[in-house]
View (cartoon, rainbow, N blue to C red):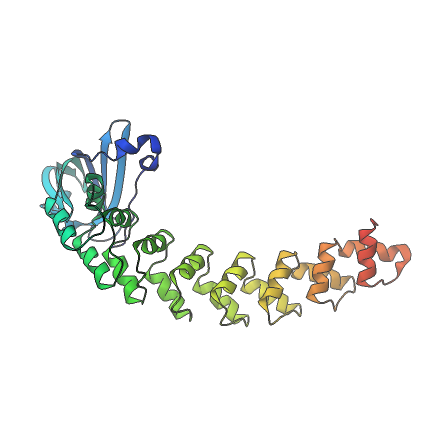
Length: 344
C-alpha cells in the first residue's frame, strides 16, 4: 500500500527532542473514511498536552483486528479493536457514528520483535523503545527485513529500519523497485529515492521512454528536475533523441523544451548540438527576438551572432534609430560598436 507517514515538524525540533522520544503508553485515535476502497484514514495523537505529535495514514480495514465495516456504519456503537504490528500493538477503544470514530489506545511493544531482529543479524544495538514505537506506527515488519536480506542489502541498524519506516520505505516499495532491477545495497539510498518521489511507476515510465538501468542518483536527479516521459517525448519529436540523463536535466533547467525547439526550428535554427540552444535560451535569444532583427533586415545571423547582439543590447528599435541617423545599413559589428559607445 502506498502511504505517507506524517510527523509534525515539532518532532525534529531540538528543544523537544527528549520529550518526543518518550514512548507513549496511550493516546487518542481518529478514523475517517479512506481515500481508496477498503481503506480508512487513521490518525493517532500522543504525547503531553501542548507537546503532542500526530501521525496519519491510509490503512486497509483488514488491518484492524475486531473492527468491521458494519461496526463503523452504526450510530453511537462502542468498539474495541487492535492494530497489531510486528513491533507492537495498539489496543483501541472508542465509538463510531456514521463511518467516523474516535477514542483512546494503549500501546504495548512486542518483546519478541527485538529477539527476532537479533536472530536476523541486525547491525548495532537493539532498537530503543522509541525506535520500536516508530516501527510499530510505520508497520516495519520482519518481512521487510527478510526482503532486504534477499536483495543483498547491507544489514541495516535498528535506527535505519525506523528511519526507513518513517520515510515510507515499506515492503512493497522495496519489492517494486527490486523487480525493476534496482538493488541499492544501502537503506539510505532507498530513503532518498522515496523522499524524492522515485517509485516503481516513475522508473517504469522512464523505461518506456528508453531510459533503462539508470543509477539511483540519476533517477533522483531526473525526478527533482522535472524530467518526465512527456518532456523526453517533446524533445524526441523535435529531433533530439538518445540524450544522456545529464543533457535532459540541463535542457529542462534552462527552459529548452519541445515548444522552444520547434519555434527556433521554424525560424531556421536547428543545431545538432542542443547546447547551442541552451546558450541561446540563457542569453535571451528566442523566436520573437530573432523575428525582430529580421524585420530590421538582419536575416542571416548565426546563433552566436544573435547571442552577441542580445548581450550588447541590440534591438530592432536601436537599429532603426541608427539607420535613421544616416548610417545606412551597418554591419552587426558596427551596430554593436555604436551601442557600446552609448549611442541612443
